[in-house]
Length: 71
Image 1 (cartoon, rainbow, N blue to C red):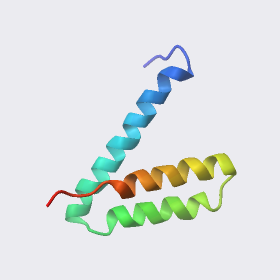
Image 2 (cartoon, one colour):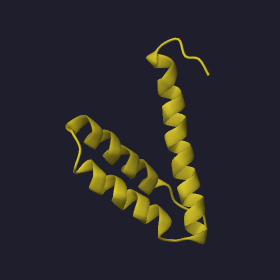
Image 3 (cartoon, rainbow, N blue to C red):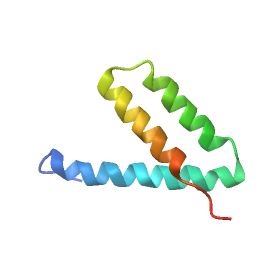
């Protein structure tokens, strides 16, 4: 795929983050610890990174954590 500028990438990246959150939430129905493990790993990694990366990783962890399974 070809992109004309960075602004074209932002909506795609946000969509991929949401897709990842949905996927991990669905997988957690089969493996209840999967989503929690990914969120913990992202937060652990955030603590080892620069400020910009730390914020991105923390935000992704929070987004994933916010998704819940419907009963």
